[in-house]
Image 1: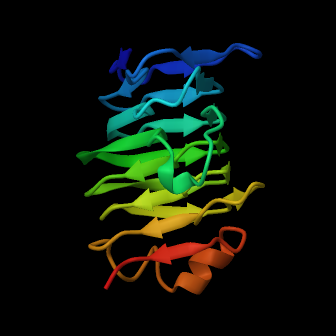
Image 2: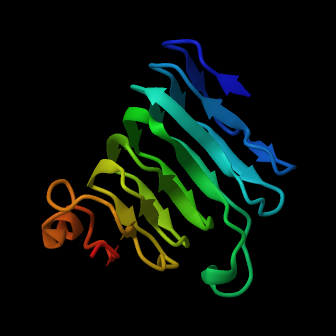
Image 3: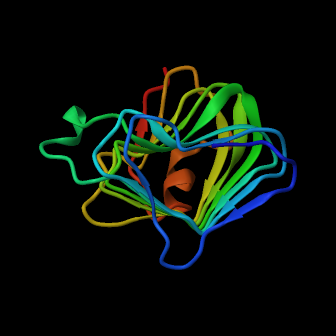
Length: 184
C-alpha cells in the first residue's frame, strides 16, 4: 500500500495484526506528514524486504511493534528483513519513537542523505540500526534480550561529529549501546 496523502494517520486497532505473506513491501510512505501509529506487523516467513519504506518529509513511525519470525543460526546468515528503510536522498525529519523491533536482520537501514530522530525504541535480536551516510539523532533507545549483534552501526562515509560523536555520549544516551564505528 502506498500512503501519500499529506497529514493522514494509519492507526492500528488493539489486537490487530498485519502479516506479510509474500516478498513485497507492505507500506510505502511518501509525501509529507504521514503517521504510522500503533500497528503490529510481522511476516509468516522471513522475506528480504522492509516492512515500511519511507520517503518524503515530516513522517512519524510511532508506537508500533514490528518483528520477523525467528531465524535459525547466527544473524550473519539471516534473511535481510528490516523494520523500515529510508529512501536515499528522499527522507527528511523522520521521527521514529516508542516502537518495538525484534527478530529482524535490522530494525532499520538509514540510507544516504536522510535525516530524523530515533527516540525511545526497544530493539532486540537484530544486527542493529544501520546508518549509511544519514544524519539521525538517537536518544533513549534500549536493547532487550537476546542481545543485538551491535545496537548502532555507523558505516563508512557517515559524518563525524554530532550527532554521533563523541561515541561515549551516543552510547550513554542510548542505554549503553554497543556501537560499531566503521568510519575511517
